Image 1 (cartoon, rainbow, N blue to C red):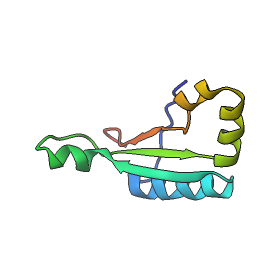
Image 2 (image 1 turned 30 degrees about the vertical axis):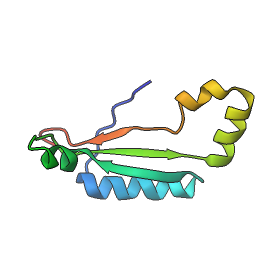
Image 3 (image 1 turned 45 degrees about the vertical axis):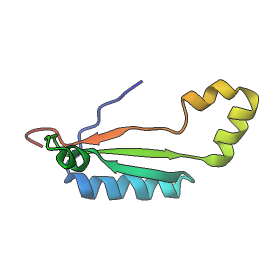
Image 4 (image 1 turned 135 degrees about the vertical axis):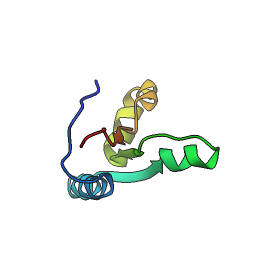
Length: 86
C-alpha cells in the first residue's frame, strides 16, 4: 500500500535523511535511481523523482526461503517525488 508523505525539506535533503534513518534501522540501500535525470538523458522531462530500493538482506532471505514468491515484493521500492508548491 502506498502512503503519501509531504516533506518540508528539499528532495535531496529529505532523501539523505530517509536513507540515514533506514540505515539506522538496519536496512541496506541497494540503489537510489534519479528518475528525472534518466528522463533528461532521453530528452524528456519529469518532476524531481528518486526511486529508493532498500531492504534487509537477512530478513528478506529468511522470507524468501519460506516462500520464493516473496521475491516479487522485495526489496522495497518507494519513489520520492517533489510535489508542486512544496
